Length: 418
Image (cartoon, rainbow, N blue to C red; front, side):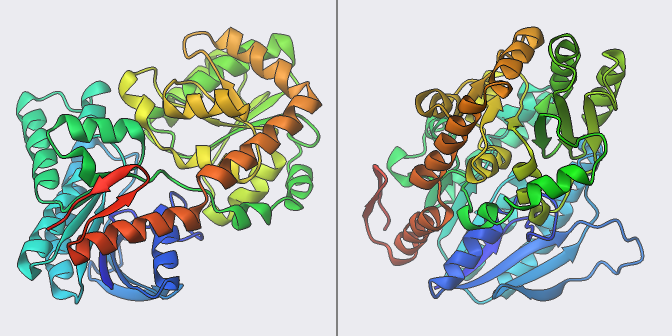
């Protein structure tokens, strides 16, 4: 099968950010399919001409459109970037040879080139939902204009209406899709995954990376690695670090990343008087550097604002920690919290009580037996539920079913086509 794969934020392991599309695409190629990836190169090189160019990444043919983008851009600037890509990607996708269109959000505007190319080429479309839009931007107050909200809702329904099948990254996302009237039997849950081999390779690098950083050395380490978005509320970690000063000042917190929430994080860290004492903020690193940092950590975290809409998230940092065999601490409820509680692979922290969160972390980090057992449970959870090769096989079945107008049963979800 020739798959035209649209993802505005495609990353390889040498880049910073999610590599789900890379992991899925390379495994589809390994299974004999041809993948044409349509994406953006989001550098800030103003001298680069804004023209498409092509590379081959692990046998994935990637069509790159240079287009500046950053999480630090204003909401209006990001919307403009979304629509620029939607227009140019429509023409590019329609020019490629393929048997099926597979598009993954966010942003939801990816539906525009996906539907255009599918209609133009008379091909089936499979749409992947990574976040529920417009629910999330509405929940955090980023989408306040009633007309903009209505337009976003119409775009969501437009995407679903034109999709042969939908992939959701969590059970909560599936529920949200089904609430719009889309048939439940045509929605398959395929969460973010764990690259077990990739994260196993970094274990020896943990002690080395500790010694390279004088502020770390042998101190217990809690790490947050990922986007510092408004939606993540990472300044919560500064309040936890403030409370930790009285409990165990040797325990340190590291934030690796950038984003619009960085200013609030730094401000809170200064207010708590923890910056460069027991809380350290450093730029994000490429995915290939993450195994070493996770190997150095005692506890990994995934954070979001205390909003019900956030509980359906499928954050990569959660799954990377599991793959690395590290306990995970999260500050939200939902399906990930349920996995942690049932497996013993980590902690569910109270989002509104940093002092209690600090106490819970101090207690567990001081318990070597718990750290070992929770780490083993994390790795087991990754192996049994979220291994990328198995998930790629499930995605392949969805795509094959959509492309061949047949009916299959997958993971408890009945998919009907034709």
